[in-house]
Image (cartoon, rainbow, N blue to C red; front, side, top):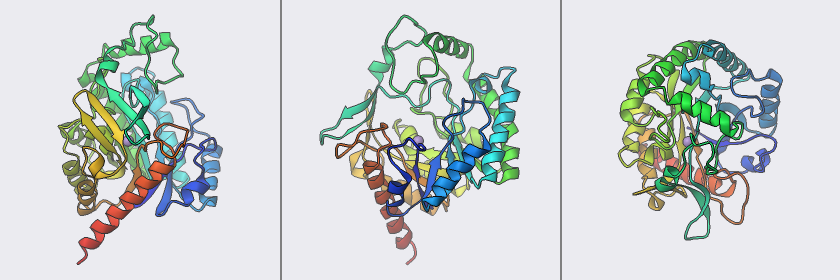
Length: 350
Ligand SMILES: [Mn+2]
Protein backbone atom coordinates (compact mmCIF):
# COMPACT_ATOMS: atom_id res chain seq x y z
CA UNK A 1 0.00 0.00 0.00
CA UNK A 2 1.21 3.47 -0.81
CA UNK A 3 -0.40 6.40 1.02
CA UNK A 4 -1.06 9.28 -1.34
CA UNK A 5 -2.46 12.80 -1.22
CA UNK A 6 -4.22 14.91 -3.82
CA UNK A 7 -2.47 18.10 -4.88
CA UNK A 8 -4.02 20.70 -7.20
CA UNK A 9 -0.79 22.14 -8.56
CA UNK A 10 1.03 25.39 -8.05
CA UNK A 11 -2.00 27.39 -6.92
CA UNK A 12 -3.02 24.82 -4.28
CA UNK A 13 -2.64 26.47 -0.83
CA UNK A 14 -1.68 23.00 0.43
CA UNK A 15 1.91 22.94 -0.84
CA UNK A 16 4.06 19.93 -1.64
CA UNK A 17 6.33 20.94 1.25
CA UNK A 18 3.41 20.65 3.67
CA UNK A 19 2.31 17.32 2.21
CA UNK A 20 5.87 16.02 2.56
CA UNK A 21 5.62 16.47 6.34
CA UNK A 22 2.53 14.27 6.79
CA UNK A 23 3.75 10.97 8.28
CA UNK A 24 3.73 8.09 5.81
CA UNK A 25 2.54 9.98 2.72
CA UNK A 26 4.78 9.02 -0.20
CA UNK A 27 2.84 9.76 -3.35
CA UNK A 28 1.15 12.71 -5.05
CA UNK A 29 -2.14 12.46 -6.92
CA UNK A 30 -2.55 15.29 -9.42
CA UNK A 31 -3.42 16.30 -12.99
CA UNK A 32 -2.80 18.94 -15.64
CA UNK A 33 -5.61 21.35 -14.83
CA UNK A 34 -5.19 24.09 -17.42
CA UNK A 35 -5.95 22.12 -20.60
CA UNK A 36 -9.59 21.84 -21.76
CA UNK A 37 -11.23 18.42 -21.47
CA UNK A 38 -10.51 16.28 -24.52
CA UNK A 39 -7.24 17.96 -25.49
CA UNK A 40 -3.74 16.49 -25.31
CA UNK A 41 -1.68 17.49 -22.29
CA UNK A 42 1.63 19.20 -23.20
CA UNK A 43 4.59 16.98 -22.28
CA UNK A 44 6.31 20.03 -20.74
CA UNK A 45 3.42 20.50 -18.28
CA UNK A 46 3.57 16.85 -17.25
CA UNK A 47 7.34 16.89 -16.83
CA UNK A 48 7.25 20.20 -14.95
CA UNK A 49 4.84 18.70 -12.41
CA UNK A 50 6.90 15.54 -12.14
CA UNK A 51 10.00 17.58 -11.35
CA UNK A 52 8.24 19.67 -8.72
CA UNK A 53 6.83 16.58 -7.03
CA UNK A 54 10.12 14.69 -7.09
CA UNK A 55 12.13 17.73 -5.95
CA UNK A 56 9.84 17.81 -2.90
CA UNK A 57 10.82 14.20 -2.11
CA UNK A 58 7.53 12.68 -3.23
CA UNK A 59 6.54 10.17 -5.93
CA UNK A 60 4.72 11.19 -9.12
CA UNK A 61 2.70 8.04 -9.86
CA UNK A 62 -1.05 8.74 -9.87
CA UNK A 63 -3.17 10.98 -12.11
CA UNK A 64 -6.65 12.09 -11.00
CA UNK A 65 -8.18 12.59 -13.40
CA UNK A 66 -7.86 12.48 -17.13
CA UNK A 67 -11.46 13.59 -17.74
CA UNK A 68 -13.53 11.89 -20.43
CA UNK A 69 -15.02 14.27 -23.01
CA UNK A 70 -18.84 14.41 -23.08
CA UNK A 71 -18.86 13.41 -26.79
CA UNK A 72 -17.35 10.06 -25.78
CA UNK A 73 -20.04 9.51 -23.16
CA UNK A 74 -22.72 10.61 -25.61
CA UNK A 75 -21.33 8.36 -28.35
CA UNK A 76 -21.10 11.18 -30.91
CA UNK A 77 -19.23 10.74 -34.18
CA UNK A 78 -16.51 13.09 -32.91
CA UNK A 79 -15.66 10.64 -30.12
CA UNK A 80 -12.88 8.85 -32.03
CA UNK A 81 -10.80 12.01 -32.11
CA UNK A 82 -11.26 12.53 -28.36
CA UNK A 83 -10.48 8.87 -27.66
CA UNK A 84 -7.27 9.18 -29.67
CA UNK A 85 -6.34 12.23 -27.57
CA UNK A 86 -7.15 10.23 -24.44
CA UNK A 87 -4.85 7.42 -25.55
CA UNK A 88 -2.12 9.94 -26.29
CA UNK A 89 -2.48 11.32 -22.75
CA UNK A 90 -2.11 7.80 -21.36
CA UNK A 91 1.10 7.36 -23.36
CA UNK A 92 2.46 10.71 -22.25
CA UNK A 93 1.84 10.33 -18.51
CA UNK A 94 3.17 6.75 -18.67
CA UNK A 95 6.37 8.11 -20.19
CA UNK A 96 6.65 10.37 -17.13
CA UNK A 97 6.37 7.39 -14.75
CA UNK A 98 2.64 7.42 -13.95
CA UNK A 99 1.35 3.99 -12.84
CA UNK A 100 -2.35 4.66 -12.25
CA UNK A 101 -5.02 6.89 -13.83
CA UNK A 102 -8.32 7.68 -12.10
CA UNK A 103 -11.30 8.73 -14.24
CA UNK A 104 -15.06 8.64 -14.14
CA UNK A 105 -17.92 8.25 -16.62
CA UNK A 106 -20.57 10.51 -15.06
CA UNK A 107 -22.68 12.56 -17.51
CA UNK A 108 -22.19 16.35 -17.22
CA UNK A 109 -21.98 16.67 -13.46
CA UNK A 110 -19.05 15.28 -11.58
CA UNK A 111 -19.59 14.98 -7.81
CA UNK A 112 -22.77 16.70 -6.59
CA UNK A 113 -23.40 18.31 -3.20
CA UNK A 114 -25.96 20.83 -1.98
CA UNK A 115 -23.64 22.65 0.40
CA UNK A 116 -19.86 22.71 0.80
CA UNK A 117 -19.61 24.33 4.23
CA UNK A 118 -22.25 22.69 6.38
CA UNK A 119 -21.41 23.33 10.03
CA UNK A 120 -21.13 20.18 12.15
CA UNK A 121 -21.71 20.19 15.93
CA UNK A 122 -17.98 20.55 16.69
CA UNK A 123 -17.74 23.73 14.62
CA UNK A 124 -15.97 22.12 11.65
CA UNK A 125 -17.56 22.26 8.19
CA UNK A 126 -18.09 19.57 5.60
CA UNK A 127 -19.81 18.77 2.31
CA UNK A 128 -23.40 17.55 2.44
CA UNK A 129 -26.14 16.33 0.08
CA UNK A 130 -29.81 16.83 0.89
CA UNK A 131 -32.19 15.36 -1.68
CA UNK A 132 -34.94 17.94 -1.21
CA UNK A 133 -32.53 20.69 -2.25
CA UNK A 134 -31.45 18.79 -5.35
CA UNK A 135 -35.10 18.26 -6.24
CA UNK A 136 -35.62 22.04 -6.41
CA UNK A 137 -33.04 22.38 -9.17
CA UNK A 138 -33.87 21.72 -12.81
CA UNK A 139 -30.93 22.25 -15.16
CA UNK A 140 -33.34 22.20 -18.13
CA UNK A 141 -35.01 25.35 -16.87
CA UNK A 142 -32.65 28.02 -18.14
CA UNK A 143 -34.58 30.80 -16.38
CA UNK A 144 -33.93 29.30 -12.98
CA UNK A 145 -31.21 30.89 -10.90
CA UNK A 146 -30.85 27.82 -8.74
CA UNK A 147 -27.52 26.09 -9.10
CA UNK A 148 -25.53 23.71 -6.99
CA UNK A 149 -21.97 24.21 -5.80
CA UNK A 150 -19.29 22.50 -7.85
CA UNK A 151 -21.07 22.81 -11.19
CA UNK A 152 -18.75 23.02 -14.12
CA UNK A 153 -18.27 26.77 -14.58
CA UNK A 154 -16.99 26.26 -18.12
CA UNK A 155 -20.59 25.78 -19.29
CA UNK A 156 -22.83 28.75 -19.89
CA UNK A 157 -26.41 28.24 -18.75
CA UNK A 158 -27.53 27.60 -22.34
CA UNK A 159 -24.75 25.11 -23.00
CA UNK A 160 -25.64 23.28 -19.80
CA UNK A 161 -29.25 23.16 -20.90
CA UNK A 162 -28.23 21.74 -24.30
CA UNK A 163 -25.92 19.03 -23.00
CA UNK A 164 -28.42 17.91 -20.35
CA UNK A 165 -31.10 17.77 -23.05
CA UNK A 166 -28.83 15.56 -25.21
CA UNK A 167 -28.42 13.11 -22.35
CA UNK A 168 -32.16 12.87 -21.93
CA UNK A 169 -32.22 11.03 -25.26
CA UNK A 170 -29.74 8.50 -23.89
CA UNK A 171 -30.75 5.38 -21.97
CA UNK A 172 -28.62 3.62 -19.38
CA UNK A 173 -27.93 0.90 -21.96
CA UNK A 174 -26.74 3.52 -24.45
CA UNK A 175 -24.35 4.86 -21.83
CA UNK A 176 -23.10 1.31 -21.14
CA UNK A 177 -22.45 0.80 -24.82
CA UNK A 178 -20.55 4.12 -25.07
CA UNK A 179 -18.53 3.15 -22.01
CA UNK A 180 -17.69 -0.24 -23.56
CA UNK A 181 -16.57 1.45 -26.78
CA UNK A 182 -14.24 3.72 -24.80
CA UNK A 183 -12.88 0.88 -22.65
CA UNK A 184 -12.13 -1.37 -25.64
CA UNK A 185 -10.13 1.49 -27.15
CA UNK A 186 -8.14 2.66 -24.13
CA UNK A 187 -7.38 -0.51 -22.13
CA UNK A 188 -5.05 -2.05 -24.76
CA UNK A 189 -3.09 1.23 -24.81
CA UNK A 190 -2.91 1.35 -21.00
CA UNK A 191 -1.78 -2.29 -20.92
CA UNK A 192 0.95 -1.61 -23.45
CA UNK A 193 2.14 1.35 -21.35
CA UNK A 194 1.93 -0.57 -18.05
CA UNK A 195 -0.62 1.87 -16.60
CA UNK A 196 -3.61 0.84 -14.49
CA UNK A 197 -6.91 2.50 -15.41
CA UNK A 198 -9.11 2.97 -12.34
CA UNK A 199 -12.71 4.09 -12.75
CA UNK A 200 -14.27 6.13 -9.94
CA UNK A 201 -17.84 5.37 -8.90
CA UNK A 202 -20.58 7.90 -9.58
CA UNK A 203 -20.90 10.36 -6.71
CA UNK A 204 -23.52 10.09 -5.36
CA UNK A 205 -24.28 6.60 -6.66
CA UNK A 206 -27.76 7.33 -8.03
CA UNK A 207 -29.27 9.21 -10.95
CA UNK A 208 -29.61 12.98 -10.62
CA UNK A 209 -31.73 15.29 -12.80
CA UNK A 210 -32.86 12.25 -14.77
CA UNK A 211 -29.35 11.74 -16.16
CA UNK A 212 -28.19 8.13 -16.37
CA UNK A 213 -25.60 6.98 -13.85
CA UNK A 214 -24.31 3.44 -14.21
CA UNK A 215 -21.24 2.90 -11.98
CA UNK A 216 -23.11 2.69 -8.72
CA UNK A 217 -23.11 -0.74 -7.06
CA UNK A 218 -21.69 -4.27 -7.01
CA UNK A 219 -23.74 -5.47 -9.94
CA UNK A 220 -22.57 -2.59 -12.12
CA UNK A 221 -18.94 -3.03 -11.04
CA UNK A 222 -19.13 -6.72 -12.01
CA UNK A 223 -20.53 -5.76 -15.38
CA UNK A 224 -17.91 -3.05 -15.81
CA UNK A 225 -14.95 -5.30 -14.99
CA UNK A 226 -16.23 -7.97 -17.39
CA UNK A 227 -15.83 -5.51 -20.29
CA UNK A 228 -12.10 -6.34 -20.52
CA UNK A 229 -10.32 -9.34 -19.05
CA UNK A 230 -7.15 -7.42 -18.27
CA UNK A 231 -5.74 -6.45 -14.86
CA UNK A 232 -5.06 -2.90 -16.14
CA UNK A 233 -8.84 -2.50 -16.29
CA UNK A 234 -9.79 -1.74 -12.71
CA UNK A 235 -11.28 0.46 -10.05
CA UNK A 236 -10.76 3.44 -7.85
CA UNK A 237 -12.79 2.18 -4.90
CA UNK A 238 -14.38 5.32 -3.44
CA UNK A 239 -15.93 4.45 -0.08
CA UNK A 240 -17.80 7.74 0.16
CA UNK A 241 -19.38 7.44 -3.29
CA UNK A 242 -20.51 3.85 -2.78
CA UNK A 243 -21.18 4.28 0.93
CA UNK A 244 -23.71 7.09 0.59
CA UNK A 245 -26.19 4.33 -0.31
CA UNK A 246 -26.85 2.00 2.62
CA UNK A 247 -27.50 -0.75 0.04
CA UNK A 248 -23.79 -0.99 -0.80
CA UNK A 249 -21.64 -3.26 1.38
CA UNK A 250 -18.38 -1.41 0.88
CA UNK A 251 -16.16 -3.74 2.95
CA UNK A 252 -17.42 -6.74 0.97
CA UNK A 253 -16.61 -4.97 -2.30
CA UNK A 254 -13.18 -3.93 -0.97
CA UNK A 255 -12.35 -7.59 -0.32
CA UNK A 256 -13.91 -9.02 -3.44
CA UNK A 257 -12.31 -6.65 -5.94
CA UNK A 258 -8.90 -6.46 -4.27
CA UNK A 259 -8.82 -10.28 -4.25
CA UNK A 260 -9.43 -10.09 -8.01
CA UNK A 261 -6.48 -7.69 -8.30
CA UNK A 262 -8.74 -5.00 -9.72
CA UNK A 263 -8.56 -2.22 -7.11
CA UNK A 264 -5.66 0.01 -8.06
CA UNK A 265 -6.58 3.08 -6.05
CA UNK A 266 -8.76 3.58 -2.97
CA UNK A 267 -10.43 6.79 -1.80
CA UNK A 268 -11.19 6.26 1.87
CA UNK A 269 -13.75 8.69 3.24
CA UNK A 270 -16.44 8.64 5.90
CA UNK A 271 -20.09 9.48 5.28
CA UNK A 272 -23.14 9.55 7.52
CA UNK A 273 -26.11 8.19 5.59
CA UNK A 274 -29.35 10.09 6.31
CA UNK A 275 -32.94 9.47 5.23
CA UNK A 276 -32.70 12.41 2.82
CA UNK A 277 -29.06 12.15 1.69
CA UNK A 278 -25.72 12.15 3.46
CA UNK A 279 -23.12 14.25 5.26
CA UNK A 280 -19.36 13.86 4.96
CA UNK A 281 -17.54 13.39 8.26
CA UNK A 282 -14.04 12.95 9.65
CA UNK A 283 -12.54 9.55 8.81
CA UNK A 284 -13.12 7.71 12.13
CA UNK A 285 -15.36 4.64 12.01
CA UNK A 286 -17.35 5.92 14.99
CA UNK A 287 -18.15 9.16 13.16
CA UNK A 288 -20.29 7.81 10.36
CA UNK A 289 -21.92 4.90 8.59
CA UNK A 290 -18.73 3.22 7.33
CA UNK A 291 -16.58 0.84 9.37
CA UNK A 292 -13.18 2.07 8.22
CA UNK A 293 -11.37 -0.69 10.13
CA UNK A 294 -13.36 -3.35 8.32
CA UNK A 295 -12.73 -1.67 4.96
CA UNK A 296 -8.96 -1.44 5.55
CA UNK A 297 -8.91 -5.04 6.81
CA UNK A 298 -10.80 -6.18 3.70
CA UNK A 299 -8.31 -4.44 1.43
CA UNK A 300 -5.40 -5.96 3.33
CA UNK A 301 -6.83 -9.49 3.27
CA UNK A 302 -7.63 -9.11 -0.42
CA UNK A 303 -3.94 -8.46 -1.08
CA UNK A 304 -4.42 -4.83 -2.06
CA UNK A 305 -1.12 -3.24 -3.10
CA UNK A 306 -2.28 -0.04 -4.79
CA UNK A 307 -2.60 3.57 -3.66
CA UNK A 308 -4.81 4.88 -0.89
CA UNK A 309 -5.66 8.49 -0.33
CA UNK A 310 -7.72 10.13 2.35
CA UNK A 311 -10.64 11.53 0.41
CA UNK A 312 -12.45 14.71 1.36
CA UNK A 313 -11.73 16.13 4.77
CA UNK A 314 -13.63 18.65 6.87
CA UNK A 315 -12.39 22.21 7.28
CA UNK A 316 -11.01 22.47 10.81
CA UNK A 317 -8.85 24.79 12.92
CA UNK A 318 -9.90 27.86 10.95
CA UNK A 319 -8.47 26.62 7.66
CA UNK A 320 -9.95 28.08 4.47
CA UNK A 321 -9.50 26.90 0.91
CA UNK A 322 -10.76 24.27 -1.51
CA UNK A 323 -13.79 22.54 0.04
CA UNK A 324 -12.95 18.96 0.99
CA UNK A 325 -9.28 19.45 0.17
CA UNK A 326 -7.76 21.30 3.10
CA UNK A 327 -4.57 20.14 4.76
CA UNK A 328 -5.44 19.40 8.36
CA UNK A 329 -8.35 16.98 8.30
CA UNK A 330 -6.96 15.07 5.33
CA UNK A 331 -3.62 14.78 7.16
CA UNK A 332 -5.47 13.40 10.19
CA UNK A 333 -7.26 11.00 7.84
CA UNK A 334 -3.97 9.80 6.31
CA UNK A 335 -2.52 9.25 9.77
CA UNK A 336 -5.59 7.35 10.97
CA UNK A 337 -5.64 5.18 7.84
CA UNK A 338 -1.91 4.48 8.17
CA UNK A 339 -2.57 3.45 11.77
CA UNK A 340 -5.35 1.10 10.74
CA UNK A 341 -3.15 -0.41 8.03
CA UNK A 342 -0.26 -0.98 10.45
CA UNK A 343 -2.55 -2.52 13.07
CA UNK A 344 -4.25 -4.82 10.56
CA UNK A 345 -1.07 -5.91 8.81
CA UNK A 346 0.82 -6.64 12.05
CA UNK A 347 -2.09 -8.48 13.60
CA UNK A 348 -2.06 -10.98 10.71
CA UNK A 349 1.69 -11.60 10.87
CA UNK A 350 1.55 -13.55 14.17
MN1 LIG B 1 -13.64 9.70 -4.35
